[in-house]
Amino acid sequence: MTTSPANQPTAIKADRQAGLVSVDWADGHHSEFDATTLRLLCPCAYCQGEAGRPGWLDTNPALTSIQTQIVDMRLVGQYALAPTWADGHDTGYYTYEALRENCPCAICATDRGAG
Ligand SMILES: [Zn+2]
Ligand SMILES: [Zn+2]
Image 1 (cartoon, rainbow, N blue to C red):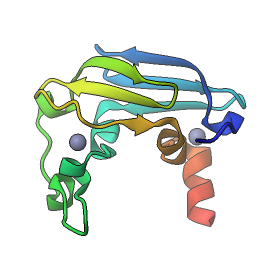
Image 2: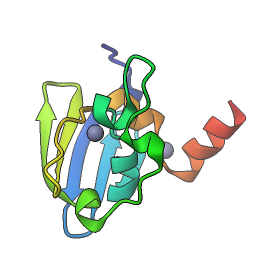
Image 3: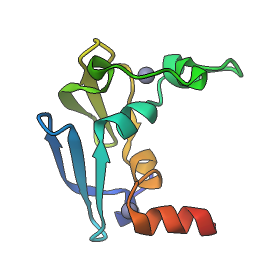
Image 4: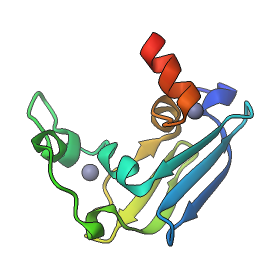
């Protein structure tokens, strides 16, 4: 559990119509995830695999519109977001830390490329 402001959201907004999730961070940074990006980051064992076994996302699936549609979004304790997808999938707990690490903005993408 980290308390770094970079991993501390101050506001989380899910626009289900637009399929956008935006997060304001305590250090002033702002992240915007489109639903497809978010689904591809799903950290659950089914999507990412476990114990060395590949997951569903490792098969490069063609995502259907219901697989990239957010129908609900809940907070898990103080540390994670859990979206429910239109295909019923809801076992992915996206920790704030992982969300920040995968921030798709140009600044973070450049940082990751450099690091
Ligand atoms: Zn998943
Ligand atoms: Zn960023």
